[in-house]
Image 1 (cartoon, protein in one colour):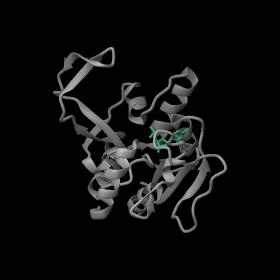
Image 2 (tube, protein in one colour):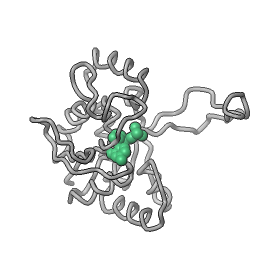
Image 3 (cartoon, helix red, strand yellow):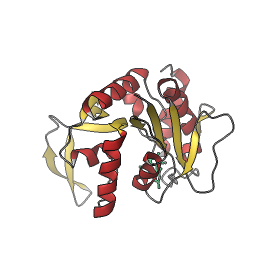
Image 4 (cartoon, protein in one colour):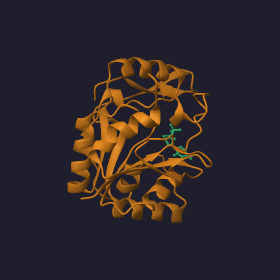
Length: 215
Ligand code: C5P
């Protein structure tokens, strides 16, 4: 199958406070460039949704389109810009993609229809009370934290996005849109290094991973 990597990178990154997050550098390379370098050996094309008015840096092995007002709108625009059989959706905010995860997500996407990287939750979970106090303990058995990449047969994800848009259903996650329609999503063991860079603390962690990163 023809495979495309689709990278929504049109967010403003306000929680990081360093301008558009995809262009923040760790270890001398932008978060976006790191995702592109990891993905491009395993796909036929890389498409990136950028904030309006921004362009890809010279030499990046990817094609750019303008993103939308939400992540969901950016992903829909990316889906409409490719004819690939399989799409790997990956957040630019997760700069370290192990080869094993890319391969397993892509294979399962084609075989099952949809697949996502995810990790079993290791911490104790508690529902807070008033957002300041311990409320209710939530058993973590069977709970997984969802990461990206997420892989799909393109026509299935496009149909799911179009029906979500028509119904005004907002989603932060693509696999969730497929599951919502009763279709199967395979969970592929992810990797701790696939964490999302959101806060300044995450940036410090990313600098440390960059120093030892070997895919
Ligand atoms: O803000 P957050 O980290 O949850 O965003 C997840 C991903 O979605 C980021 O890679 C961000 O650039 C992307 N995004 C987008 N278009 C938007 C908002 C977010 O492509 N309008």
